[in-house]
Length: 246
Image (spheres, rainbow, N blue to C red):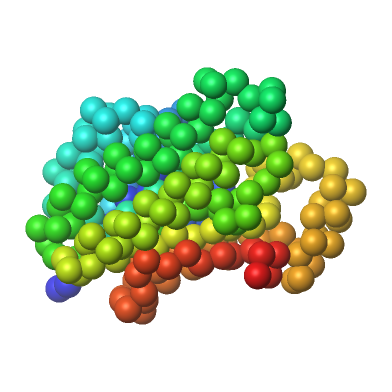
């Protein structure tokens, strides 16, 4: 019997991360989910994951802390022996106009979004290189491609992830490890649910497909990039934005 593959998803307790976890579980993967604060959410997620008759592991870790990342990956390897797919999804926002943005808010966004992606990728690829296989999917954003007023820290972190992804793809291709970035546009999540109907209408008017994306839209793309169906795709940034940026 073929051994189940394993996926590690950072920031996987809700939103896009949660949908990614459930999508991989439904396709027979063992699932490791990292979280930082939403204990109630991850306990509910664990029950949903186990309904798919797969094994799961839920670990609390700050992705910007190197020791916590090493512990996260060590425990994952101890349980499942390998990590076949890594999804760097953990991220935060601290939006403000440039002249009002504090150094602390700038640093924190880069620490979690960019440094966190670096630390987890570095820790996981050590094991992927031994197996000479693996797929890494990093969550960027269309904001990292075109910028956005009031999000200079977030845009810088996501643009950094794009450059990081391309560099990693070049470094690791000879070991049969692929790295790609997914750049979502406006996606319906907890954050967008608080917007007024008028704001949502204004957003939809800017999107050629006239709607926000869903977490499922993004999760299906991430699953494809982690699967063998995309084994000749690496170093790419795929916008998933209803045509907003083209």
